[in-house]
Length: 448
Ligand code: 5CA
Image (tube, rainbow, N blue to C red; front, top):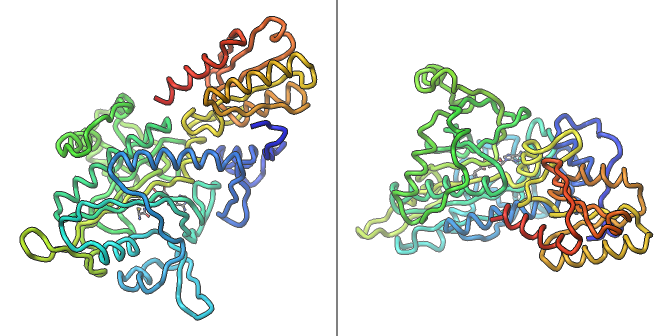
């Protein structure tokens, strides 16, 4: 992408309304624009990151055996009256009436709708297990939308739902999602610590939240420092191997970790040696629930079992805050100059900076590099504007692409390019003809 033809409305000043780094940086870099409290437009740069996160989530869901579909944002109230949640949800639910005075609502989650779909089409245990997910916008009329996309009113969620015959099968489905969440967040460069959680309006008695540590997180968390020493990169396993999947869950739930609501100070002191007790703030990026028959009973989702009897389905639901993750990743990765994207979710891989736009030799070298890098499959944002070098450097640092390739007249004369690593600030000179292969290798190393 040529910056001269792109839409990147970077702000010069820090927006006053932003209280935390991610919100400030998302507004400054022109990733989002607020349309109403907690409601945002996703401008091109932000949209690219959102899609990258969505694709990682999708890939890991599919790997764990979940099947993608799409349900609407607008739902009939009648479904929610059947589960009893229409009244329970209170003012957080946005209620709408259409021209025929039919009661509708903007979905805050989809347990009712998916259970109704499954009830209609699944009649036999032979059609199980079933795990379905979608990635769709939700609306919750939060009392205090704040921190930009972190607590929005309209937000993008991956919500998945499992349906099984027995409690044991249902727990395996839950465990699979538990492991897939560890994998999903690790693939974005995050360590998300699973913590026992309250179930709130979703219900059930088995639930974990996944939190990443950040000073600006909304939750107070307590955990064992042993989590810091865990290897988060190795969750290669066969998802059908129940014991292997359960072993990972045991390993990650054997260490103390709890949010404020579930925290037990006595147990914390008893189980965790003093030097390893950590408390801090966390951002909830995912939440999984197992609630058995809570929705399958009122919505009549039952199958004929191998014993010839009817059984209500054993169900769970699994959420990931896709749009919240954009903010959370920035909270976890930024410095005084701007964002530092992990390569897998970066809007572009490389920022190519032309220091002397209009100088024939420099322009030609940049054009050649732009073509070579793009042909090698790298996503390049080419700063071909006529602005001063200082402005180009500052803007490129601000938007935080993992690597910068810097070309000025002197480099061209020497046949060299300067490559800067945004995270470490390290700079090195690489012969122009090797830039594409060096960058391809670097990218492959961090994406694998
Ligand atoms: N039905 C269940 C799981 S599918 C559910 O709705 N769970 S949830 O309420 O915990 O939401 C799932 C995830 O969505 C949360 O972990 C969080 O990351 C994200 N989320 C929830 N509320 C908001 C919000 N107001 N703004 C941004 N993200 C949110």
